[in-house]
Length: 115
Length: 115
DNA sequence: CTCATTGTACGAGAGTCATCGTAGTTTGAC
DNA sequence: GTCAAACTACGATGACTCTCGTACAATGAG
Image (cartoon, rainbow over all chains, first blue to last red; front, side):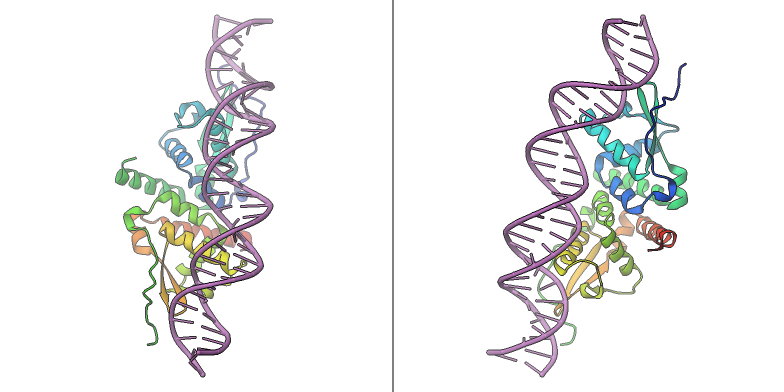
């Protein structure tokens, strides 16, 4: 099969378990904020290897785990790849408008600073 | 004089030096988020001693400094007191709507969880 | 089966963070 | 000058974070 989902399961917090403080902490790291911005600019999901981050693979794994455990992204295995998607709906229900404002703020700062 | 401002000066980042990551990090701590919520609910400024935080005075000082250095609050001495105010205008110019959304998210979570 | 791709687990190191206690400074009131 | 109130500075401690390297596991292609 071409896009089978593995039995390997990953722990995600339920929607009601997502804490604002954890989300803000997850997004306060430049690398993770960049990942989230890339995810937000894409329809669907992206594999971990899609991102060309300035850190090693182990560190990349770490950052994606922080995002997942904070409830910002949802991860699923597809073959050898691990696909990542924003939990837009959950976040929007819990914290209306928050993600969009943060993304907008990041874009504004990027334009200002030149990142 | 009754409300003189001391010569003791405190370092604040200029508006253009405020970084989104630092603001998010500053707000990702429960105690600091609570302080900011209290400040947001008040017209004008509040002294450090106004807050009844579950930590010692030294730790309180630490948290207010983090908030100040991130550009979230502005601090001035008035007598023996140190007054704290949100940098609403600066934050609104840099990151439109961000602070309000975070405050709203915190309020929603507080209502949900019961904080 | 073999192999390359993709990501994980583990341990370690350097750094930062939240917290405290004690001692000290600054201010205003008396 | 004396004193209390408000806050700071400093050092310490334990926890957590970001980073890495090496070794390992799961998958799909050949």
